[in-house]
Image (tube, rainbow, N blue to C red; front, top):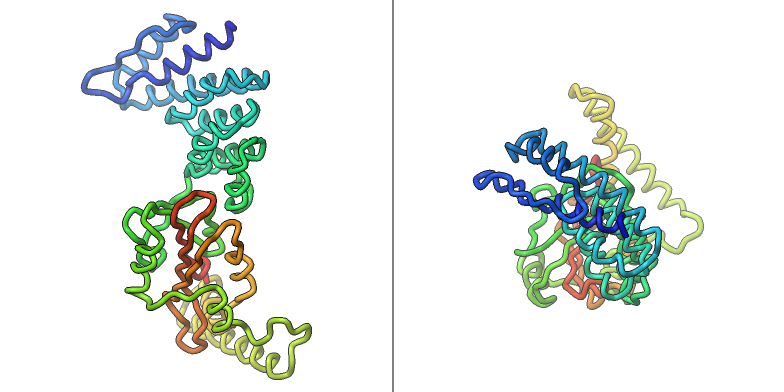
Length: 336
């Protein structure tokens, strides 16, 4: 009980309004906290915007994190309110600890909204902890969220950056929110969610790129000619060799223009990707999943000039895991 009281005191201390520089620091001694601790924090945060204040608060957050995880080892659900309080504080490490604690405290349907919020935090280790907690949940809605997640999210402490319309070179409907946990930037996929209706988002894109295609229509229109063939025929080999030759020529031209070997190699890769067939099979495997995506519509935002293959797509669907309208923007991966 003493540990619980002290932890509650730490949470109260961390929740003090140190950001209100105009009114000064206002901290009351919480139950279980030592007056000396509060005095030291007040001194460090005489100027709430100072580095010393930030470091002092981070130190208290680290201590509270350890205490929270220690309490969660009990597995007693009555400690959930403490974890929820920690999750509301502006410290990623403490949020990650809160998610980890909830995962140890028999998470159920009442915890899913908070874990969903933490699953989409910009800091990878917060998402990682939330994903693990959802894996321990008794709520049937946790499983689709886990299915939507791309990988285990990693355990980095540096916040990821959300892409913009400029970086994607694709417009986004007003109110679209980036889904960190469902996106794979290295593969050129950025997922978003919005409360707007599916029809309204579809109209947003059809007004720019024409009528959307169903998955079957998209597959039929852009399926690779060599899909389903165990061995490439002579024509396919000849086409591949021609693509490779043109890509090599692009690299040599880049080097003659004074570009570095790395830049020239990137130019070769870009040229090859622009000429190579679109991988319809991988695309279908990603989105032909009726348990996750409903009423899928595919909008071709850009085609390669020569091959006519899609190089930039907007996929709109009912995101059944989140209960909202989903948008996936597929672009050439970085460096390609």
